[in-house]
Image (tube, rainbow, N blue to C red; front, side):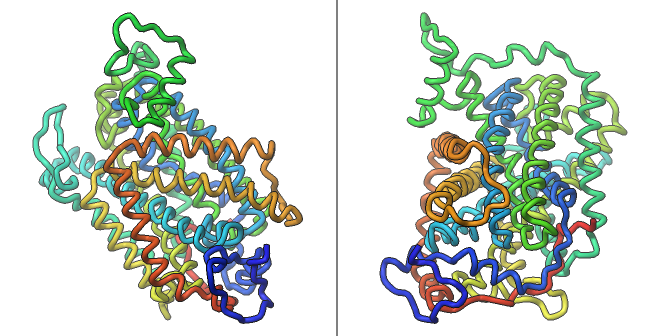
Length: 539
């Protein structure tokens, strides 16, 4: 651990190859945040509410239909179980790191303390996909439900202004137009950005209310929709793969599993149905779970982070997994899975129930719930950029705090403009795949970080320890990498991701490496502003 610089270290610049892997000490991170002015006001219930508020959103309201129609069929329920198990492993790793390092910056800070600055920078790049592009993805889902709701009350937006360029817009399965720009999605991002710049501490109770509304909508859909389920729609649970295997070829269950794994690794047929479709569906609905990681960004505001952070992370994940499985079971039971390739599948299901008033309530609740997710995701992205800017790796504009609103207003505006551009000009499929790539890569690094710190610094105080070590972090990292390969089989996604990482590393070597405060012996202490947090929930 010779590259660690404690808070009392001599202010001597570090140069050479070792400088790439320069680490912040755990003690230094605690010192940086101990003098901050953020109020510790979040208990375990607040953190569970935060997690649920960020998890339940576009994933369940939008992506369930696509994953069922294009990949898994009724076995979308199994896909949710697979991804839920994976996220449980990752959540246990996050819980150990969050209890040990209850600071801002999430996985970026964890990487800085373990594997060094260059890995922390890569993690920062991945978190841009996980938070920034995720907010754009959520905005596209928000747009779909708003368009559907406006249609119900007789208002019709030009179809070309409700989807990204070139995206097919269908009505009753027929292509009626091609998108030019998704204007509602851009408006949604701009609205949330303005709210974040202004500061929304006073909306704490409203945020709690939105979580209640969102949960009520999901539970109501399950409770009412179960009476409209046609169990025949559940079978066959795993439809035959398309294209089918060659005539005369018979395979057992484990042969199917092996073939699906081989297809993922070799980027061959991982598309529709069969066991491979179930795995591809799991990779798709992974987006529905990524919100649990947002709880870790609130470490500096938790009353008792050693106890409350693990409860918040794991509790929100377990509750949402149960709701996801039940919701997907009802959804594919009401609507034949092949018809669910729509950005608003739950809206389609409630429309089929023949209860217009209930459909209206569900859509309003979905819009409110998705709005809160956009708020938390954009907040998380600005918070990570704020932390990176304080470390000198990004321009100081991202850490500039408004004198009146006490928010990082310039960084928030920059993030908002970029997120709005992606929301308006990229398709939902592309946004989901890129967000999942960033999240899966980030989660695998988090699991490996737990492994590294256990062996490199076994004496560190760990209020929460990941159980079944090293089985949990190893399996968590392996499952993340496996699903990551299934998404990277898409050539366009893979090329974008590679170009994005190369461009990001060029920024680091031309700016970040020259301005790093840690490398120049500077210690960032007492610089934490009093900020109005959009997710701060009153006890």
